[in-house]
Length: 262
View 1 (cartoon, rainbow, N blue to C red):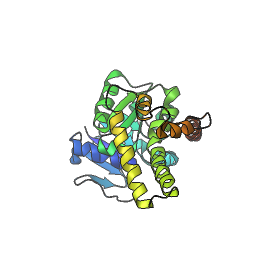
View 2 (view 1 turned 90 degrees about the vertical axis):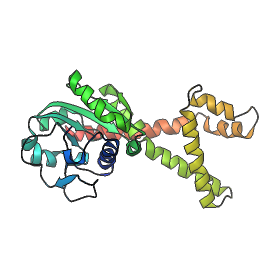
View 3 (view 1 turned 180 degrees about the horizontal axis):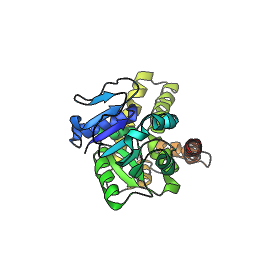
View 4 (view 1 turned 120 degrees about the vertical axis):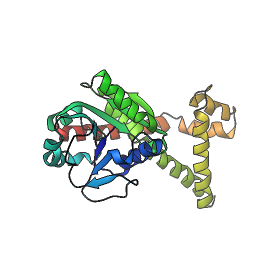
């Protein structure tokens, strides 16, 4: 596949590096259009405007959502007729992309940062893409991690859960470490212990046989110290309530970005 990226920040760069490392894309088949040069994988060319000549098989919109109009004004005419546009712009709806760019198919994608390791999540949605286009996008995203097609009504919520989720987990790791330090552990030791604990627990959670809730109960013997800690997290105003508020706030922001892009 020949792929052009419009923008290549943290997320676009993570996807690109994984695709090349996995052999999904050849560096010579990729071109990045950006406002200034970035450090890219060896062999990937970049410039301020798209290349002359034939259009690529696909274009990935990977700039900031707020740059949509400026990018469309600058490049939509040159990209007209491209077979596939994939957008990772948070909150920007398929129709908003289709109004600005002429393509055979438009697919929304929401990856998260662990795609850099092939351990990410990529949510996909498209009302207009046919089965061939959907299969092509699924194959492109497969090396990045878990790929899920989701209905458009859930896309903002999935963006909040999976797209923003790593940031929320990083906050949890820091909070676990900070709590340990507040109770008397040396801060650097608390940080190491918190990180290793979360990393190991996540690996074990992937093992078949038990749900995460069942694994929690496996650790927490009745009347033990773990159970006392879970009693705090399981309060009505505890962890679930906090995370519901967190996801709701993130999803609301996605809806605001969508309204602005319309």
